[in-house]
Image (tube, rainbow, N blue to C red):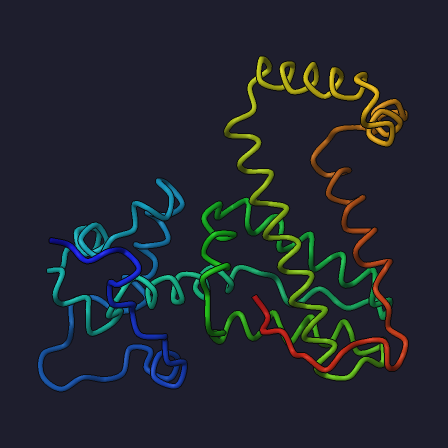
Length: 251
C-alpha cells in the first residue's frame, strides 16, 4: 500500500555550495554529448510551451536526446532543475539601464521588468514560491535592486526585505493575472458582476456598496499594475528604526 502523502520522503534541500559552483565542470573520460546549460534550456522550453507539470526528467531527457539516468548527474531531482531554470531565465533581465538616483522610480522600473519577465515565462510565479537558493543571474538582479535602494539609507536587512516584498508582490500579481486571463470568459465576468451587484444591494455590505458605486478606472492591465505598484512602493517607510530585525530571503 502506498504511504500517505505526508509520510512520503521529501527531496533533500538544494545545497547552493554544491549546485552553483558545479556548472559543467570538466569530467574525466569521454566528453559528454550535452551540458547542464542544454538540459536547463530544454526544461525552460518545455515549461514555456506546456507549463511546469510538463517538466519531467523523462521529457527533458527526450528533448536533449539523452537517457534519463544520465541527467541525474546534472540535476538529481526536479527541485534542483527548477532552481537551474529560474536562474537560467534570470539572465534575460536587463541590468545596464542607468539608475536615476530616485529609488522609488528605480524600484518601480525593476518591478515592471520583473512583470514582463514573468509574462514571458508564465511558470515563473509558481517556481519562485518553491525556490530555496539564489544562482548567479538572480544574484546579479538582486545586486541591481540593492543599488537602487542605496539612497534610502536603509540597512542591509531592510533592503533585502524590500526586495523580497517587491518580488513577492509582482509574482503574486502576475499569477493572478495569468489565472484570470485563463479562466475569465465574458459570461463569467458578467456573472461575477451580477453577483457583486446583488450582494451590494442586500443592505448588509454598505462599505462594499459604496466602493462599487465609486467611479471606475481604466481596466487595462498596465494601469492596474501601476496603481498597485504605486501604493506599495510609495508607502514604504524608510525612516531609521522603522523596520524589524527579521531578514526575509529574496524570492
